[in-house]
Length: 400
Image 1 (tube, rainbow, N blue to C red):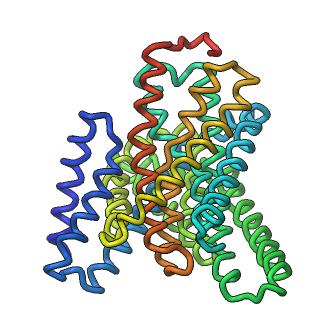
Image 2 (tube, rainbow, N blue to C red):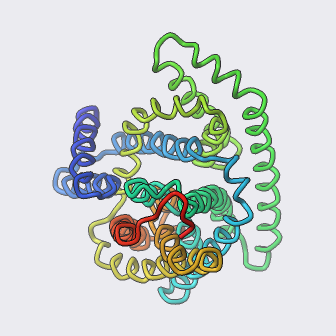
Image 3 (cartoon, one colour):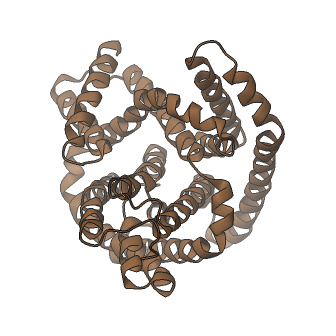
């Protein structure tokens, strides 16, 4: 196990460096690494239960670092200021992408209820990091359109994590309940969930408003540079574990923990040093995604992935593009719409959880199809966005 971890860490670094030259997100390389390990294991059989459990633990640490960083990099103050505009685009793109995803899975692909719900919620998530990198390269991220994109993507992240926690709670209930008693049980479970989420959110707000500044100040007084980052990361792990104990998931806890520290400018210094911890653990989440892929189901996954990919492109591009058109015109609508298409971390966390629940929650071919959707959107969408921004560059004073 130690040998495998060491080799995979080194390979992950090399893969990231190689893919950077082609402007390709490293997560695709990490998934391929995990899939390669799965292929090699077929004749050798070295992936025993102990090793798989170890990978699962490392993957959980990866989930925490990924969502903690998403929360840490969120600008809640700016988001509140831009909420009236961004919320219209957010609601439209989430509703349309979820609806199209559910209809495509449930009625076009004849997938059962619970897997269709997992697919629908996963398709609402947007990977802000994929598109933002392209905007940064073009010097367009600080334009009004760039700021609008960030606000909408942040709302997408928050809503996707909340919906993710809700489906994790409801999936076992839907499986075990009789049809005639389903609605009361769903309402009761959702009510309990809402109360616990409100209480957990209030707890995080209390820490953020009254304790965070003192905690960060104390952490920053440590003599070594790494201490503040490690103390903040440790606090994030504690908050994530509390969320798990409350019946949510470490993902939503990590996201809220990042939001706790996001309002303090000092946290930006911590964010810079947090990068090493992120680079160490986040690849293992995507490596486990590759490990969970079944080579036998890849062929059937291609057809499913193609249908869901079409639903993804239409749902996100039109859901975000149509409201943006009335605010900025055709150019802004196309640019924002295509920038919302990539899906990565949060969508894969939803898929991973469903896969681990069992085939009743997410069949292997549906899981594989969603992995293919992730890979394709992460490669193709940045190429489209880069082409648009190269041909029609934005200036910081332009609205599009």
